Structures are given as C-alpha cells and as structure tokens.
Amino acid sequence: MQKSTTTTSNGAQNMTEGNIRKLIIRFAIPVMLSNLFQQLYNSVDSLIVGNFLGKEALAAVSSSGPLIFLLVSFFNGTAMGAGVVISRYYGAGENEKVSKAVHTNVAFGLVSGTLLTIVGMAATPVILRWMGTAPEVLPNSISYFRYYFLGALAIVMYNIFTGIMNAVGDSRRPMQYLIFSSILNVVLDLLFVGVFKMGVGSAAVATTISQAVSALLCLRRLMTKGLVCQVIPSRIRFHKDMLKEIVRFGLPTGIQNSVIAIANVIVQSNINSFGTEAMAAYGSYSKIEGFAFLPITCFAMAMTTFIGQNLGARKYDRAKQGARFGITVSLTLAELIGILIFALSPLLVRLFNDDPEVIRLGVQQARTEALFYFLLAFSHIIAGICRGAGRAIVPMGIMLSVWCVIRIIYITITMQFVHEIEYIYWAYPITWGISSLIYLIYFCKSDWLHGYEHRAK
Image (cartoon, helix red, strand yellow):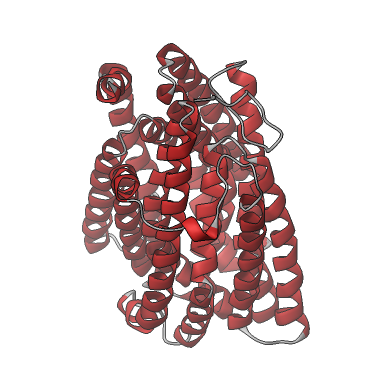
C-alpha cells in the first residue's frame, strides 16, 4: 500500500507531512478565493437585478435565498460526509477505498440532484406563500426560484466534485474553475438582464448555465487518468459499506444545515412582515455578510481536511497543532473583516440599491452584527474540527439547539411584544455567543481526539 507524497503532480496534497502552517494556508487560500468568487457569483444577481430592475425585483431575489439554502443544504451537507471519508482513507494511503468513496459520492449526487430539481420546482409557490412573501414580489420570486432549480443537478454535482478534490488536498483547481464560471455569470447576467431586459428569471438562468459549466470543468479534471480520486463513469454506483460511512459522517451535517435553513426561512418570514424595503435590505446585507464568511468557511474546510487526513494517519499531536493554528487565524481574520464592514456598510449596501430606507436598514443590521464575527468564526472552526474527527453529531446538536431552537424562540417571543426589526438583527450575535461558549467548553474538556483514536482501532 503506497502512500502519497506531500505534493503530487496531479494536484493532491498529503497534509500529514511537512510544515503545518504552510500546508493549511496553502490549502486555505485557494478555498478563500473560491469562496470569494462563489460569493460574487451569489451577489451578482442581486447587484444587477437591484440596479436594473429596482427594489421590488431585488426583494424577490433576496426572499428566495433562504428557501434555496433550505433545499440545497441537506444534500450538500450530507455529501460533506464523503469528504471526511475520502480524506481519512487518503491520509491512511488506502487508495482503493478512496475510489469506492468517490464513486459512491458521485452516485449520491446524481440521485439527490435529480430529487432536488423535482422538489424545488414543485414546492416553490407553496413555500413562498407560507413565508409571507409580499404579493407584489411573489411572481418574480416564483420565476427566479423555478429557473434556479432547473440547474439544481449542476449545483449539487459541482459541490460533490469540489468536495472530492478538497478532500485530497487539491483546492487550487476548484478555485480556477469557479473564477471562470463567475466571470461567465457576470457576463450572462449583464446580457440577459441589462441588454435583453429578460427579467428576474433570466438572472437565475445565467447562474444555472455558469454552474453547469463549472461542474463540467470539475468532472473533466476528475476523469483524468492516474488521479487517486479519478472518476470512471462505469464504476459510479453505491458501495454499501461506503454509503454507510458517508451517511454516518454526513447525515448529521445535512440535518443540521436543513434545520438551520428552516430557521432562516422563519427569520425571513419575520423580515417580510416589515415590507419590501426590509426584505431588500436584509438580502443586501446577507450578500455582504457572505464575504465575511470567507475566512470562516475556508479555515473550517481546511480543518476538516487536515484533521481527517492526520487522524487517518494516526498523527494525533499534529492534528492538535493544526487545530490551534486554524482557530487563531480564523478568529483574527474574521474580526478584521467585521471591523471593515462596520465602517464601510453605507457604501456596501448602496451597491445593491440606493433607496434611503434600504440603506438605513442594511447599515443598521451590519453595525449590529459585524463586530461579533469572531464568535461566528469560532463556532464554525470548531465544527470543522469536529467533522474532521468524525464527530459531526456534536456540531449538529449545538447548532440545532442554539442557532435554531433558541434563535426562533427569541425572535417569536420578542416580536410578540416589540415589533421592531433591530431585535431580529440581535438574534444572530446572541446565538453566536451562546454556541461559541458551548464549543469552547467542549473543545477544552472533551476527548474529541482520543475518542477518534479509540474508534479507529
């Protein structure tokens, strides 16, 4: 059984050897750039629609966001389990098991992407009405949502493919493909919305086309001969043992993502009760906040891969050192970005829409939440460490109890007594703080590392 070298010609990276800081940063920077362009991808629709079609159209796109996340997040969260499985076997040098996990994951993506298309197309009007979407916004929301979910299979498969590459330490090529498709998305948005005046739905069509291109580029790369994670179409099927492992590691994250998404839909329905300007402002700030997630998500993903590979190779002290480094860097970067967003929020919100009330509400939310990004970063980085250690059930329990149950109870009770939008904004830093405290106690007191060691024997 031959183990990989630290860096291979095919782009895979063995994170069980070499300088810990350099390896994590080398992995995290392409992920950060990928997330930057992914966020640009997600923001372009709002930017172009808001400026060319007005605040009602912007509100339509914004109100679809939590609903899209609701339906996509379960499948993508479950697929993350495959990344943990692949990284563990890659770190241990068990390439045959890597191949089985890869092909099982691709089969899972094909099935789930097809189901997502059907559910998304069928459930659109019902869920949007349940969310209390304003009547003047509803037709555009339905149009945008349905066109978006025509490309659900491409969206799921792109995330499956990039997850496979990230699991073996290759974060550079997914970045390159995403940059290309992001530029394509901008061009198509400007063409469809700005030049041809095709309406809100055409922005979703542009996203679908661009996402399909990036998925095909990833597949083309993964079909290259000699890759440890090579995809061979004739081998795509469910391997029972691998499917069990993927579900065991990924199902908690999928459930967690879905329930958090339901909580976000409930938050969105409360925002909708404040009118079109509030919907547009909330959607604009959500796009801005997405950029603040960049250091959070990239280091959380780096931790999952790094911890998974090193625990697979039984290098426990190395895993601890990497975890400490990831936590420090993630918190520092997140807070620096939070300070910038606090200061620049009027300019940033104005990029999406120049309506004074939209700007006022967006700035109010930014200045309520931005200085607490370090709490959000801590929760995500510890969750990434737990997933890499095979303990996805821990972040699931914490996120569901705090970010869902406590957040919803807080908003529901508060809105009954004081119907002011600022109290909705405060729900986020309050619940970030509670979850961070719980994670801190768990990380310091638990046997998360040794528990893995015992299970691995």
